[in-house]
Length: 323
Picture 1 (cartoon, rainbow, N blue to C red):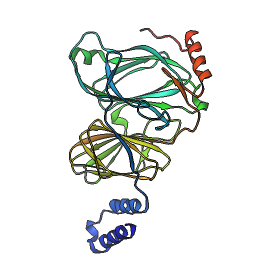
Picture 2: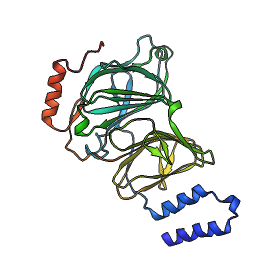
Picture 3: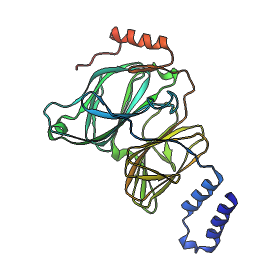
Picture 4: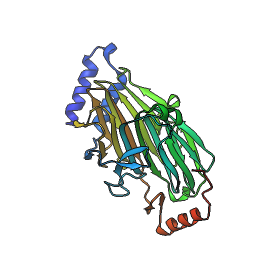
């Protein structure tokens, strides 16, 4: 198979007129010939939804359906598929609640979400924006539909990812990153059929603007009909794709909208293509090989640390935030 592929590439190199050769595509083909495709471990349809507060109807893809550390460093993925909200003068949301030991990353595809926390941070994210909150040693926060958006109502679609922190960073100071879509690095393919919007990590030397504690790749990939996009991740990186819009083809398998694809750790290459307009959320990261103990809103390394988190919460060490 490799010999045949290389023969085809060499034929194209020597028999296609030089002005018709795309050097970037040629390099991609060489790389994908020498490397190995990852196999698809699972294609997961959206689980039955549940409500978080009265604002977020979500499908929990993991850890509920996977072993707790299977997607490490990503601990949780709650996906709010498209839903229409009627107008209201009382914004829907999630009241004040604590977190410790990890980060919450909220991505808005439709709708607007406001945030406040006990570290003094606040912000509003709209379509294409990302809110990256590092709870670390402990923070109280609340999330709700933005007031003016709530008055009009409309289509909402969101994703929230919990990113675990290594033990040495779990008790660091809380932090907040408001990431606007206009600031993201973007790799646009020469044929203009695809664009990789880099939130964290890098794609083709285009770097994301999010600061992370461990190696993480997080992209929104926007595709037009006929687009093809290759990816290369280290084999030990845990990797999954969430189809936000459209139906796509990944390594020759059709993946419907709102489905999650979990890849085995048996190769480096993934090929994404589509015959219709689509959006795909790409998650890939180096696993954190440490003990993991989670309970409620806390993700720590041991049961004792969970008990200490609740004790600190009761003592007011997470600060104060008005509900």
